[in-house]
Image (cartoon, rainbow, N blue to C red):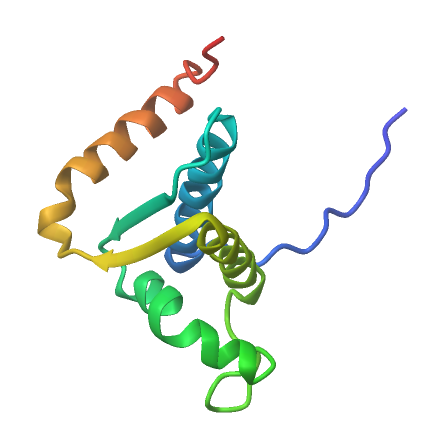
Length: 132
């Protein structure tokens, strides 16, 4: 006997969503590592990205959007609001115990990060992603 169901509607995957998700994962990782420490040093997080969109979200636009009820300058809901709000919450948590900075780097200077990402994705696709 088979049962069918409709999957929830998810926003379309885009490079901008992936870029904000990468920031979320980096902030979560930094907070988790900080929480594992026996001491409580100031947390310093530096995120470098070749995405102007992601860096501008975190450094220029995020506070204005929050003040404006998450609407953009044209009066529409901010694209990727769900992820940007999550990143904002994590950034706030980091700032409670230190600081975070977001630095844009040219794509040509980000080749090592791109290569590492492609390698990881290739391993996951090959089924080698489970590492006990």
